[in-house]
Image (cartoon, rainbow, N blue to C red; front, top):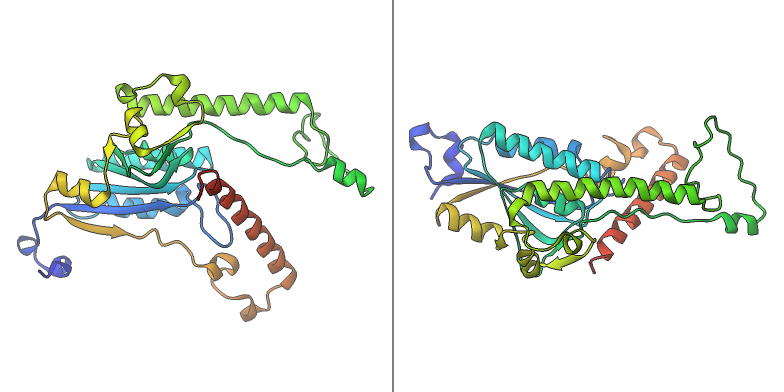
Length: 291
């Protein structure tokens, strides 16, 4: 009845009901913006460690709501989850919310068992790189592009220059290497659970939860509380772990507002502009899945 008193009670008086630590990873994977912290190892590691180090914890349940982002940060977060699970001998259950796609699916694979809602979007096992070409625009406005480099290949993929065949070949090579790493990651984590040919699984398609289950990308349909109560009993306790992300002003200006120390308005304007561009980029990630 008074479970909130458990931390203050002697060990023999504490609740003996199973305990599940819950943590939510939501958003684009990467550095983030001035307006919203991204999911990366630096922003989630403390929360993950707190979840696994919780006294008496029986399992960690991780809810994932992400359209993807940085493959490096996806891998780093995944690997940290698996390392903590092995170190503390605590099983991990992952749950897709709206979307666990691309890098979000990489994270979903961190679970010893992976679940999704029947309407969750799961998959998108592929690599995408996007850019703009504005070489004709600056030519129209009679603007010169001046670049000085040492190293003949230093100025590859310059959006202000016409596209080069060798640059396209480089992008194809890099994306192919990353895609192969992604495919191997899924093979390693899902192993004999996969139930479709690789041309289907690894072509970048994504599916709703039921079809994802048929393909073996998840173990079953279910939500955190439903599944955990089935596994640990109706009296299982849940303890939420907050990632403690920075708020808007702290992200933009540090510990103080710009008015406190006469911040440079020009610098603030540039920061806001960059932040808005990053927000737009993350919105584009979500919009690919109708969100």
